[in-house]
Figure 1 (cartoon, helix red, strand yellow):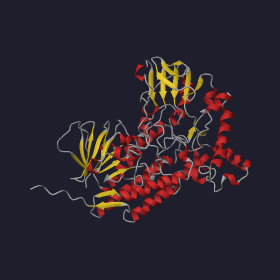
Figure 2 (cartoon, one colour):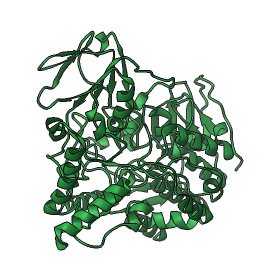
Figure 3 (cartoon, rainbow, N blue to C red):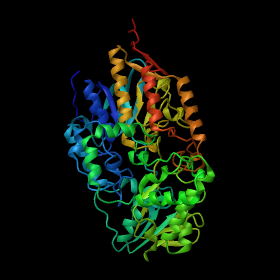
Figure 4 (tube, helix red, strand yellow):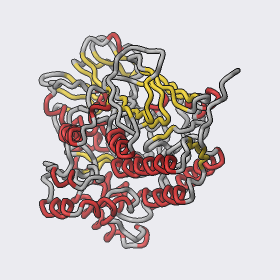
Length: 556
């Protein structure tokens, strides 16, 4: 089939535009999906809300935004030329550099001509009569497609501030997940940052360097480890560029899709080694920096006693760093196991609290009551600010999908299907929603891994699936309820063996009021998950119903 190129017209015509595939989102997942669809000769259009590519890295432009996966691993692996021709400047790339990389990829493969920018999907309804998806946008586009692929991302629906009085604030306020494209200068200002998750931990040191005074409002302290950022090791860079395909294959065969953690993973339990030896290993990993810290011993995520040894080591580092003892204790996490919330990777986060112009407020002791004209008021007092930064995170995993009116068979809304929590088969499909794919959806390893490695695994699986359907003159695939139920049970069972469900994290939706508390990602490891996906495909897509849609006969 020939490639079809269209531009959004903003008009709603009676005859819909027709494509083989509609893809929602132009981040890493959507771009690679489009590239693979072209290789199959399928017609496709990508719908993107922003005015450029990049997804997460398009929207998250807050001060200090950078990746917590090392640059040489956080890049595409499908094309061996890409890592050879691209030069990363740091061990952990900043948001602007990652965005430049994504734009380079879009240019290299001429992807923009099939993307509708500044356009949001309003609805996606499965038409049982035609066996196709009817998709509408906020610009009046009316699209019909055989397959609908959601590349909407796991962290792409910002959790908006829910404090009363926000509209009365006379200063400027920002959300880290929707940062202005123009530069924001806090020089000389009194600034508040509400939230100390990953985006808060990255932005606080940067804002503190500008602001006259920074007040940090913390509800829950987070475990954070040093990045030890710096220039990329030239020898490592040369080795990876020489044979990136093999490096990426090794990453895909690891539990987290991250080679740095895989190669330093221990085969011992912490409770089986002398405490002094364990502490020496902790120190070595602390000095190295990044996520290698989490792979120190096999029982850290499984055994509460083992986990507490590691957690206390991190707390001791916080006390060593933060000079004021009271502030240090407020920054020490105590009510959830180490690593069961997204582990943060920082640059001089705890050191920032030694600055004279930084104050930490404990929201557990004095919660915010309201935003005022001049700042905000807690149960203890009112504070005046020129700017407020809300680092309040995301409605993770399901938020972007729930904002779209997605309906499957018999008009079933996805939000109704997921009323008690998301249910999928392999994180790829939902029973009752034929030909709808979710890239890195709930029930897949996704956020517990190197996202780009997981994205490529999903896109490749979907591509192979569509190729299989075409080769066998089939055009409909749908997860069975039985397979979906069995997979959801498996995901929950594996999670229950670990300490992860003990934390009120965004992994279970605890940061969104009213959201069902279900552990959403698959914790069994990318390697085992990939094997399962391949076994399903090798067995003729076991757990899926495959068919050729036959339109209803015309009425006499």
